[in-house]
Amino acid sequence: MQIRLTEYAHGGGCGCKIAPGTLSQLLGQSATGGMFPELLVGYDHADDAAVYRLNDSQALVATTDFFTPVVDDAFDFGRIAATNAISDVYAMGATPVMALAVVGMPVNKLPVEVIRQILAGGEAVCRGAGIPIAGGHSIDSSEPIYGLVALGLVHPDRLKRNSEARAGDDLVLGKPLGVGILSAALKGGRLEPAEYAEMIDFTTRLNRPGTELSTMADVHAITDVTGFGLLGHVLEICRGSKVAARIAFDKLPILEPALRHAQAGTVTGASARNWQSYGAGAQLPDGFAEWKRNLLTDPQTSGGLLVCCTREATRSVIEVFRQGGFHAATRIGQLIAGDPLIEVA
Image 1 (cartoon, one colour):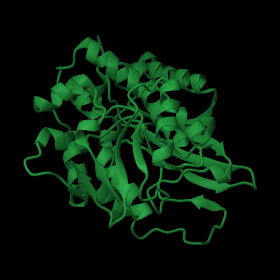
Image 2 (cartoon, helix red, strand yellow):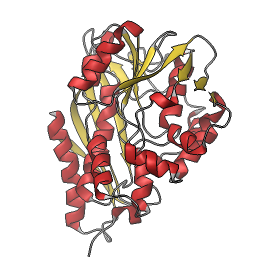
Image 3 (cartoon, helix red, strand yellow):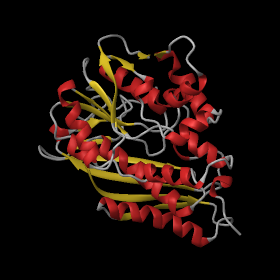
């Protein structure tokens, strides 16, 4: 019997995140304040990871990310989940050093070998990143859940927050958009084998350029585009950095099959939730097609790095991406002075 992992979950990948508006309500009364001076990054600006200063030359980057299946293949699910979790370390400009596994499985429904293949996928990605999975925690749950606690190190002076972008910075996106739409097409049985292969290629590609980009003084901020979609993550940069943004839709790198499926009406439920949470912060042109809006809010699982850098550094940033195998990397817009708002052209 062939196991379809997506049938065991109500959602998949970063699309199963709690809606941004609900999450804001949950965390609204929580604060670390100035009680821990060595805590360089908490969740005040919805950054990608927590960062704690160890000494003058080292800071510990800590993050966790896990979700329900975005694909049916067990090994691929493990690879995608692990790549996605480690991405948050790269997004802070850090080098990953170790991971812990987070595992929840319906052990009476899934064969042991299927679960083992999920774990093997995560282990393969961690080997590729040059880090061990040194432990973790597992529970018996009603839906399959897999991910990592990922730890990294960065020099405190090279830390890249999402709240230190500047007016005048260019926005450079490292991976194409559309993963959420492809995962919805997969669940609906409409994804061709070649389209699936392209989806797996990008969702299992480690965002290694983040470590090198952290050494560039003209790179002011980095984040990765994941469950809240491009619109949500750009708006988080704008709010944290107190700037506005202009994005050119025609400049966005988009997976070709995702473009076709989006135009045909394929969309995820998380896309609508993202628009409800972030839509008030966006200005769209008159007559802007709904399928285009859906791509702006499409939840990206293991998405690309979004880099804020000076115009003079843009070419060098894109070259770093391309040397790392990210040939779709491109400038998608610019940050400007103003209240946090995204103008889409």
